Length: 468
Image 1: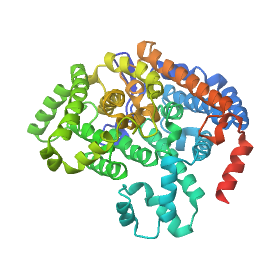
Image 2: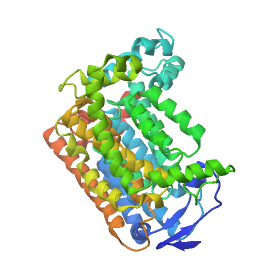
Image 3: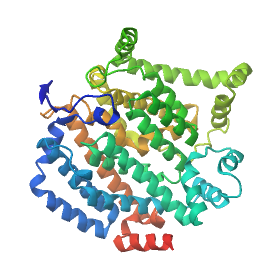
Image 4: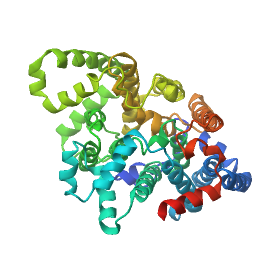
């Protein structure tokens, strides 16, 4: 155990592996608050369980709070990692069941209908050849193709399998890379505005699975594998991957093995000192905001660029030339879907010292800035770039790694602990508002317009009808 900058650390052996890189336990004010709820945790649990029976989608909120109390207690009492999920297995199972069924009720329309048509035609040609004929990346359909081949599953099974795969993947990623905060990460993800558009944006959400792992993992070969999978799942991932690859030389001297080669160590130190400054974040924002319009004009006016970058040019101009109507299912109210996250994460990035943080937290900061630029682009010159903001509006929980895993989270209350609790409170409130309002107006695309009116029996009946 050691104390540094107001933090108490319980450290394990430092080796160059993804698992140990994320195992440093931090006793901070966040955990202190949740640990203080330990005496009433079963009250929280049984309240959540009762609410879950009446309305599963609302019940998972207190259930995840209960899970975080368990995790924070382990951190505060300095216990080593125990059995799988440290006693939270039942709670996480209820959450997985709920969000899988909830996502599966999304109205079959537009992109989702296209995916169902593709699934129904699987088997007529070899998978990769068929996906090539559809001009579509193949990775999303590997598991469905296997299931259809083995079990002759119908389109209802396809929807269930996809929803289960996507939700299970994000849960396991949170547990793996943020073991001290995974219930909170899950809660912030689930209450994200576009999280339950996962089937409508199926290929993009599948790509996010690999993209998130790409950001968290530290080994180069793993980054190459998961970046390739992300691009082969949805080509828009390339923009995020290019940004992430720029920061591969970044190091954290306290938590990674040093290279045995002096020249490489010196080079990485120079790169590290150059990139991990606040000024770079600001410059990155200005550069991307400037380069995109220039590229927009150049590709439309200089044919040699189209010949030099044929694939990129095709994709870029495909989005641009379809005009303002090509918003890909988004509308002018897109900013409302991200405003809370922007108001919390933007000041966090401004206040945090990048050089003191883990590389993954720094990369999440850059990804946030790029998402912000994409939002601006949506309202200015490339409406389709709004789809890139779904990374933030659909999986904001992972972006809160910037706050949760920051060394500024100390054992006393400060602006950073205040911001994370504000984020939890406001996102829960907005999620409740969206769910209640859309149910009362019968405008939700989930549960035939009325998600609030569905109880546990409805969820079970729906699952039974989908299976049979």
